[in-house]
Image: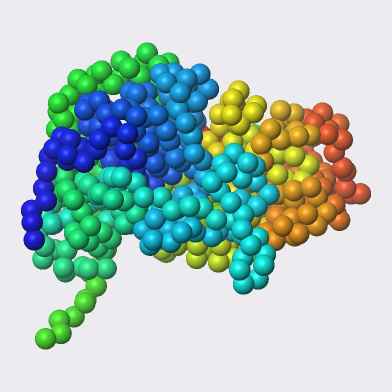
Length: 305
Length: 252
């Protein structure tokens, strides 16, 4: 098996091209900001950005002008308010108009599952009675072929590249993730290429000691990037907390387009890579995000020879 | 003991969960209400969060729906495919708490846009899981502040179906859950217990008149035969909420 380790700059340069459909998933947890920032630095254009919750990462990327389309299901800064940059793009075309394709959460999950399992569509009990059907003609109501009753279906989605942040992987890309799983497994299997970004690279024996925790097999992984704190200001369960203070501060930082541009100049274009971003953030800041330990009790798989 | 309108709303929501086994929780005020219910009227209540958490017991007030404190110590943490498929669509959610920018007389909710969809005056968050939660939870409770701009004659956009056009229109569309059962506001309580499934005033908060309630609703609100006065929060409800659940007073 090959060593798939790359730097973030190498992985983005190799796999993310202008005009592609890119998914950086992670539901509140394990959102790979490091990858989003590198895409901004490499000045990709005309991307379709796919994510259930665009979150601050897509707010930053859309303000930076990398995207022309977005596929999503919830557009908010949870517990805080709006995603101001994306709203400016939608409401006023600043910095550029943004085409939307909108679903509900389960609709997005269903699209990933259909994409991953080569199904023509995914049926779900949602959308009936909702104007979302009019807002997005790709969501359709068909007749259940067995009972004849109407059921909503969504089409499969196969992102060109999925970027998945996780706690650990081996150099072959066998990846373990815990805490909120989001739709990371489904998007990984649905995508055509996968970049895995991890807090730690571990020996293959560590992965093999706990196979139930392996969400993504190296078989489907194209690149492994070792990027500690790569999900900040989101979080990696057991490694660091969500930087809620930053999520709260973003409300002001993103209030005007010029302010976002100034923030990007300082924190994205102004740093060479994630290591420089972390140095700028400071050790003390990172230390206060560390949780106290709460380890799982080990389970015994048994040895069978 | 004095209390705020928000505290009254949280306490009313908690009491409405009496005896419930599972509840689908949102962040903020609903999260406090569910944790208060667990301490008071619903000790066996399991909290379900759309982030994939079943049986969460947050050790601090979570800012977001995906806070790591919801994970540590939970009964189960599952993928969103499992959460929406097995738990929600599987019919295991007894009560879901929902909110929105606009609600109409049949409990339909808008959380998508103000103005036309293609040229919105205000772009709101959108569905998230709300559309399927509204369809599949056994019952839904709405928690919203009573304001004329929110309680409207006509929604700008229907994100999450309630009783649709009233009567049996929800049933005819084949939605699994029975739909909106209660609307909990900072001024009054409403239910839909009539053949038309139309929102009706059933209780006012202490010191609030029916006319005050009427003035905040954009259609002639139906009034139940008996309108009760909700009991003020007890000392213990207030203590637990202030000391244990929201010590910084974010939702006071």
